[in-house]
Length: 132
Image (cartoon, rainbow, N blue to C red; front, side):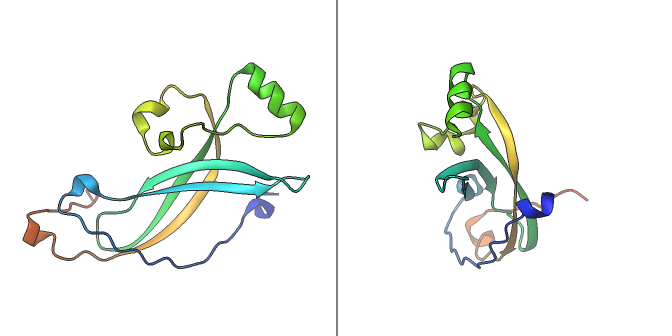
């Protein structure tokens, strides 16, 4: 049942970022974990999404993925009822290096952002929204 897989974590986070360029715009990086049938914490998936650049309310879906591993690792995971993990966590937010990984989809995380911007025009930064 898909409804049984839904977990609501409704907790507001206030974050303040300072940037003089759009190139250093922040990303949200998540790791989702679950408790397996033996009470162990197991990785459900990794995800990364950019914080929207336009002011206002935004609903963003962040796709989760997890490493698939090679044949031996998959057999090991199957018989020990475990999951593969990344050895280097920076691969989560570095898209160039991720192309060499074998991954599988692992669900979605939904974010609601309320974005306020201030002082960007004074710094010469113009933020464009999606084309309508």
